[in-house]
Image 1 (cartoon, rainbow, N blue to C red):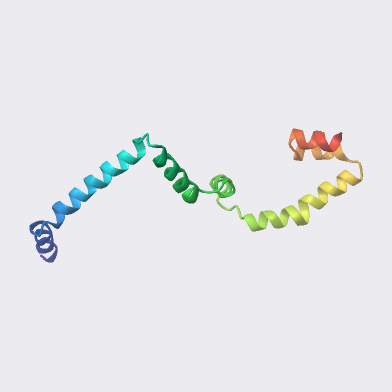
Image 2: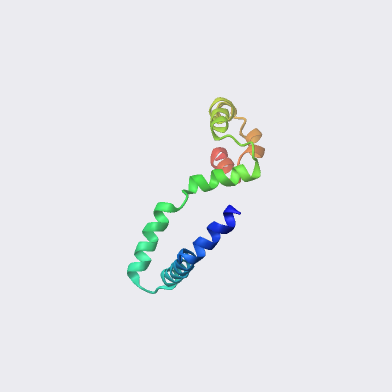
Length: 114
C-alpha cells in the first residue's frame, strides 16, 4: 500500500534515524537545561517562566471554571455591580450589618462591624 512504501522510503532515506537522533539530542539538552547549576541558566529560565506562566488572575478563573463549568466572568462582574454591591451598601448604610455576616468573610465582616 501507499503507507507501507512511504514508511520504507522514510527508513531508507535516513530521515527516521535522523529524527530519532534529534529526539535524543533534544531530550539531553532539556535535561541539561533543567539540571544546570549555572546562574545564567537560572536567569533565562526565570524570564521564560515569567513570559509563559499564567497570571494569578488566569489561574483563579481556571479554578473557578473547574468548580463550575458554567462560570462566566462577565456575568459574575455584572451581578456583583448590579446586585451584590448595592445590596451590601444598602444593608451597611441602614446599619443592618449583622445581616451581612453569612455572606462575608470574617475579616471583611469585622471591618464593617467595627
